[in-house]
Every structure is written in C-alpha cells, then in structure tokens.
Length: 464
Ligand SMILES: *Cc1c(COP(=O)(O)O)cnc(C)c1O
Image (cartoon, rainbow, N blue to C red; front, side):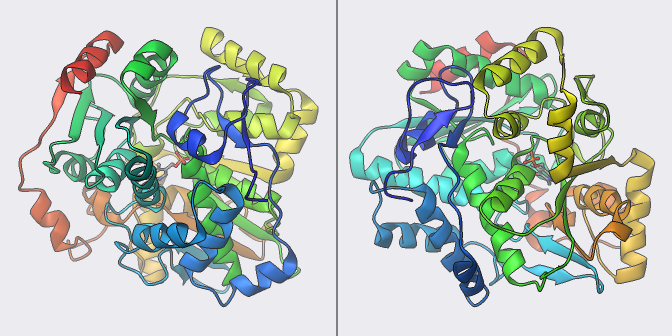
C-alpha cells in the first residue's frame, strides 16, 4: 500500500487520481467524492504497537498508507510534527475517563477549539508543501457552519501562495465561532457572511465547483469535508483512542455528533481498516435527517432548524454519499440517489441496504430542551463542562448504554466556543480561556453577501 494508492470518484468518473491530485481537486468533476480504490488493512501486530506510540507516530504510519512517492517519509514526518505542534495537549486528542464504561475523546485542543483543527492544520501544511515545492497559487474555498472556517483560516494563514475564502451563514454561527474567523486580519483571508443557511453556503460552493472553467481559471480548491484529506486525518484519533483502551471481547460504541457525516465516516473507515468497533451512533439534534433515514430508509430533506448546536444544523450530509458507495460498490446507484436528492429532496433505501447500514450504525436525535439538561447532568454527576454538540453525542449514546461495554463519545468542541448556551447551566465563566475573552473585544473583518452564487463569484474574481 502507500506507494501506488489511487483514488476514484463515488460517481464513477473514469479518471483515477493520486494523493496530491486528490488534495487539490476536492470534488470530482462528475460531482462525486474521492475515495481510495481499496481500504488499507492494519494487521494485529501493528495495532498492538500503536499502544506505545504517540499520536504523531500513529498519524505518520496511517498517512503513509494513503500518500505516495510525491512526499518522502522525512518530509511527511516534519509536516505531521508541525501540524500537531499548536495543540495544547501532549496527547493531541486525549481520552478522558468518565466512569467505568464511558469515555470522552477530547478533540478540541487545537488552536480554534473544535475538532476541525485536527485535519485543517495538516491540510494547510501539506498544501503549502506541494505549492512551495512545485510552484503555483491556489484559492481555497470553503463553506462553514462555524468551525471549519476558523480552522481553515488558522491552517492557511501562514501558507504562501494562497488565499482563503470562507462562507458562513450570516447570524447563524455562535458569537465565539464568528470571532475565531473574523478577527484574523491576514491579507489572504476573506470572510463572506451569506444571508442564508449553511446548506445555502454549501450549495453555492458546489455550484461554483461545478463551473469547471471558473474553477480552473481561479485555481480553486475545496477544504470542506468533501476533501478526502479531512477524512484521512480524522481516522487517526479512532486508532489512537482504541490503542489506549482495553476492548478485547467487549462491545464498543462510538458516539459522534453528526452534521456532514465526515467525522463519523472516518470512524467507519477505521473499522474497515481493522478496528474492532461494534457500532457508531449518529448523534443528531433536531436536524435529524439521518436518524429518520436509519429508522425508515427514507432520506427526506426538510428545512434547517436553528439550534444551540449550530455545527450540526444540516440537512444535506455530503459524506453520506461515500458511505452509500461503500455499502453498495455501485456508482450508478449513488448517481441515482444523488439525482433524486437534488431534484426531489428525497430518496429511499432498500431493505438490504438499510440492514447493512444498521449493522454498523445506530442513531438517536436529541431535542433542544434536552441539551441543557444533559450539560447539567454531566456537570453535576461528573464535574465535566461539555459544549452543546458534545452534549448531543453523550445524550444520544445514553439511549444505547445497556447494549455496550465501552462507550466513547467524541467531544467535538470546547465549551467556551458555545459559552452562551453553556453559561445557562454553568454558574461562572471560569471555563472560558482568556484567549476567547480577549477575542470578543476585537473588530470583525467580513463582507455580507446575498444568497447568490453570482455575487460570490464576483467577489472572488475581484479579490484574486
Ligand atoms: C463540524 C462539527 C460537527 C459535525 O461533524 P461532521 O463531520 O460534519 O459530521 C460536530 N460538532 C462540531 C463542534 C463541529 O464543528
């Protein structure tokens, strides 16, 4: 593996890409998402050796499976080290024990306090590596429900030869999320607030990328979770956390607050690569399209509900397409379903596919009033302070607790990032670091645009 790994589109485009091409290409020309032709398998003895390795060592080993000769081992090692040097925990993603059965996998120790840093730090560095080695200039374009944007800006601000354009839904991200994006005053960073929802932002991006001429002329590249490298980076913490647990013969559930399905898909892939994880819980808030899909097989888009966990206020779960392809291996099937979704806002899965889905996933949705209760419960019972997304994951997993011996809930954001909600339950602001308090007093740098693809294109043209 490694030396000759190639990637294909979920929708069957005939061209296979190498690692470097996949990073810069983002979305495939046929609208599909890239995945490796086959999944690398990690054998048992290698798995055992992970238990005495650092996060960075595990990351290096796994990344080698997905990269190729375009980057040497030494350079890859340097990039891995650099990418995780801005994390405040030595373990990068420390595993915290809650009680005999439950664990919290803390993914928020990066520079912008959400799990997106784990991938975005690496993407910024590796794109910067290829650009400085081979020349060229790129314009990075992304849509964010709040956290991706900040992580992308932080990941790319010091990369030479690149601009970053980030779309976020105007007034629909938390105040702290906004400040993490708009208080970066680097010349190569552009924040665009769209008068619409996150799905609108994502649709604008998809439309811009489907204009192949504009994409090529503007050297555009995507860093949304449609970018394969995001998924690749997120696989690491599943291996890391499993290497720190004794799960032999035990039933293991990972619970993941889910929006675009990138984070949980990385877990599913880690299982395909050899991890013995029984199931993954798709934890949703009131935007429960995937919970309904698992229950009935009917994937029906509804209007986006605004909740206290805005990073998962999503009705279009882009990465679900990668799962549908993996479960069926059928490009035509994926194309059909995606066509139905975009034309009718709906598709239905057959019983045999649904069965395969349920073999690996369960799902439970948490309603808005429950979120505060969950935050309170974990604070009073365990002295933890969790953010609303993490609360959705914990509360959702609790529904299945009798079925499993080990439950790992992913803590996807630091509570300070959603402090207004957390403060309704937690008495004082001691959990808010000074970095965040100071940021709140700074000016925003952003433009506000209509929900209109033409306006966004114009803005990009003017600024590149
Ligand atoms: C992005 C995000 C999620 C959702 O992750 P997906 O990969 O989109 O499913 C959950 N919680 C937080 C805090 C996030 O920023």
